[in-house]
Length: 368
Image 1 (cartoon, rainbow, N blue to C red):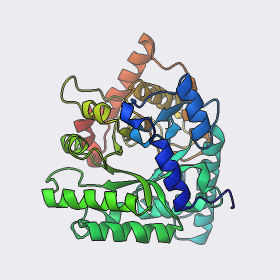
Image 2 (cartoon, one colour):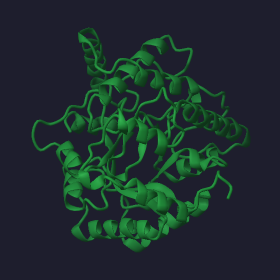
Image 3 (cartoon, helix red, strand yellow):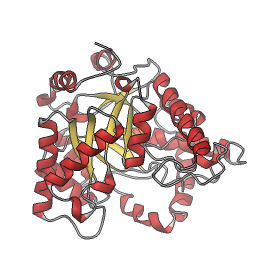
Image 4 (cartoon, rainbow, N blue to C red):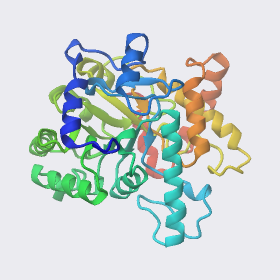
């Protein structure tokens, strides 16, 4: 069989093997000793210079920094003539060629460095990264959420419609399966009804049983609701995708991480840089703040990884340079010294003050 292609039968066999030892309640954490050997044997795109962490009860070993699906500010690193932004690739052919080359090159650098999971959370992102991984799908774990056709919108809140969305999305992207399907749930404000929750849970369990996905979970910006879901539905809540910034702290009581550790859930952290509010520059390589912003990014990654319950932050990386920078952060000394803590504190004070209006809700994630 072509070793570049993994069938649903193959991954169902591997998924069963990955689950061995879950009942022992292993905590998500850094691969050391025997765990390091297991990570090396079982993970994808292993690189001895990368750190690997166990993605909760999935049993997958993923890189300590993974690739987020967003490509904000990508127009600062490629010479596009038109506008490149939002959640979809550019429309003009010339800009599209530049864009897809950028995404292919970034994914290639990630694989070389041992970064082995991408989390795509929109239709445009899924199609883009499936294209970037064509011919090497087995080299990277694929997180899947077609949020435009999921539970954030009322017409997609039944199990039937959610499964339809998954099937259509896989087909459109040319994917046989997703490694993790994490439904994007209602973010804030009014919460899902009990019936809507049960439909989500049914869809996740059914998709895994059908062999369309290996593992399941949810994404939400509502911390108490997400904690309740982890505690109430531990069988389907294998992975969560949720905010965790360069300044987030663990609540001393009633923390989301209490439930995460108890139920052995993998955690992928979005918004590590608070939608770029951590940075002084605009993301362009010629910015006078580029070197300082690189340092801030590394400090942020190191800080986040000091929480052993976090599997990995998933920043959207727009250049090979940014890939190299976060890899360097993983390789640096983990704990921040007194001067570095003060430096990061000053930077995150600016970050909170500079949050765009549409991201001020991140203040709710100062404590998790």
